[in-house]
Length: 171
Image (cartoon, rainbow, N blue to C red; front, side, top):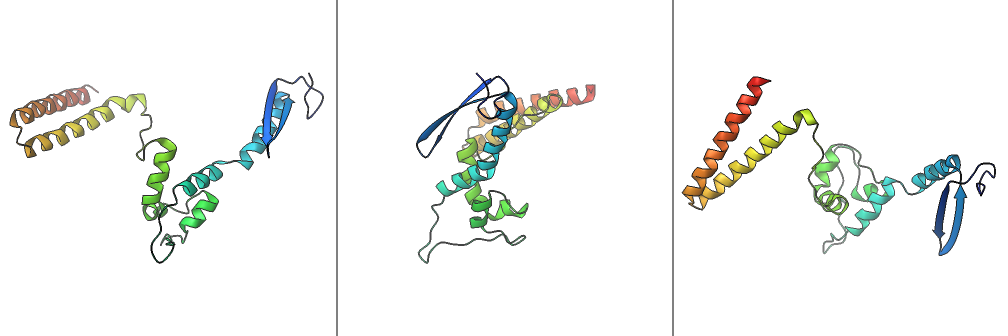
């Protein structure tokens, strides 16, 4: 079967489009499929996705009507962000923190970055986060007056810190 667009090469990609409840089947060669992919990405880019998701999260209203929050640094409003799908500057993250937190949670399932760590840094980063978790648990145990548990946690912290120091000295 030949490509439906160029009519010259063998079709290797079969695409089904549904536009306005009309189904169209396209058989494309690799080159035409790549071009079609670029066109689709331009039509439905990340900005559209973010704007669409931010529309879902638009539930903040006050008695006097909708609030228009603007970034003091660049002047971008949340409405502008919803239209464009991009923030204007780094200060926008602080200005729209509450709305962005909801949006990021919908997109990623979390509003905290939990990305990958380079292999050479994985152990120190993991140790650091484990230490912080243990220190938090230690504080809670002390507040709850669970001193035996606090002593066990303290010992774990000391052991981790000792192992971490040994690893740093060896490197």
